[in-house]
Image (tube, rainbow, N blue to C red; front, side, top):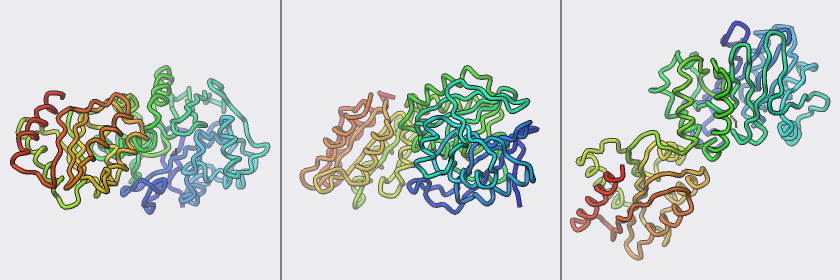
Length: 398
Ligand code: FEO
């Protein structure tokens, strides 16, 4: 049975949802599932915009048939070849033998690398090329590294629709509601959207900036991403988030405290600092146990807040391993422009502070406050004034 939504008079959402997958890319937890969006345009030529993950291929094929019956698909625009969107390409080729694939040169190469038999089926396009399908003329805009090098986005001039590939996507399955104005995005979706962006595309901020600049020259009325809701109003809200995230600017002035604790002593110091911050008037404080929080959530929160406190026990004369992993992920995702404070703990030879400082020093535009705290096994009365001073330093820098 097909299950589709109309986006406009002649454009259908024909994607689907996966609520059974636990880890997106086998890394990132998706407790709310994920949608794989695909779109079908009915014009003089029928045009498919991207396909879906293999897990929902059957639903996807039923959706196509539900919309066009026994008619054929003439073109398949492939904006992105990552398998969460491209896995069903060959299935479409088998069922619609006349369909031609429209994609970039690199996308063609990637499809061959994945073993797709696309000989004689590909029309390669490049930046600014246009194609008319009848009433609808589209222009192809390359979007390298958003999120793979072959990516492009496609703009439908007639209806002002941007098929944005991974850009403007989010984790989270669609519960019948397709459009951003059918959900409370700011309440229910923004955290997953940020976690999706920061972990999947976060490394490529400059490339996202390039795409945003190109997009700003287009009169965009609807954004059709490959994951999550379709945007048909209030586009500026989400574009502004993308602009901030891709410039690595924090969304909020506030303090994120991430601690790595073995027996609760480092946690006690983090709690004390948080309490002091709040007493002194900074209530926008969030705390996470690095051992209990998946790093994808930590990365997302790190992109959100202006100030970061890292409190780590020393472990095997090194940074506590989950804290070390978090820092490595931060560096890999190009995080920058944060103000950071450090608390180290250790029962002998505490040195996690020095080592965290070294790692942070390899990231761009990170300001590390001087009042580093070194604890010997536990927080004591004698440490209170230094934590108080640290709270004052953080507040002064906010
Ligand atoms: Fe949703 Fe880069 O794939």
